[in-house]
Length: 338
Image (tube, rainbow, N blue to C red):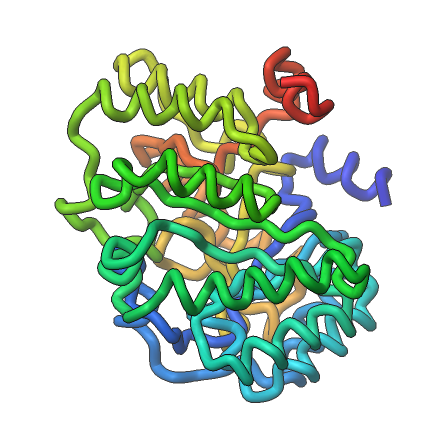
């Protein structure tokens, strides 16, 4: 398999080592930053389609699979999806879930995650009314923490053996709560990913009330984030954010810098394959992956990447440069000596 990825590296073709599959577009929340619910047609990826896609991904070299939505827990055949994913023998399968649903569904989803060895990644963006406003729902913190505490009890008993992850998106609405958010996630002993609000991709909405306009406020937040325990976002990423605030960051595009390992793909319910841009580059039901990367739609999107102003965010930059991980602070961070 290493030889296969090495060949792709020399050909500058994507490895698709990590890949996300959107198994449904329905969601239990209506987040201010997310455009997916407004675009939803209510469709689900049927298990047969999922089976074809995972087989092609596995053959091509995908090793880490993320199941996303909308809210993937709303899929009516979630257990069948988990069964197929487990049978495909990926190195890791993760469920990106907001955990915002009934107690009964929380119990079911967590039980299935244990049964099929699926990691749970969720979002934790604030407390009380702030969380409700950001997520477009009510009693968000209480509902989500009910599931998080349940997972922690299962961790203590040894039933759930993976360390779960919470992602925080820092915006103008929750930046004042950031110290409390970090402290709570440290208390829960969850892995933490932290990003700043952004709106440059097809799945994000531009909302002025979410934009942090005070540069010093951003820099102070970054200084606080650097000290967080269990932080998995690499510290070199925050170096880039600081440079960006000072106007010293050049264009970054992982699809151009490192097309083999930096290219990230999102597969939708009908098999269409997307990047950060709105137009699909092909369909994994009707086309082989190798053929997609030889075709005109992919070449046209590469030209679009050339004209794009670039970005600096965790979705697209973290895997763009292998040499970035030689950053001393990040090495110490991952060795637990930060």
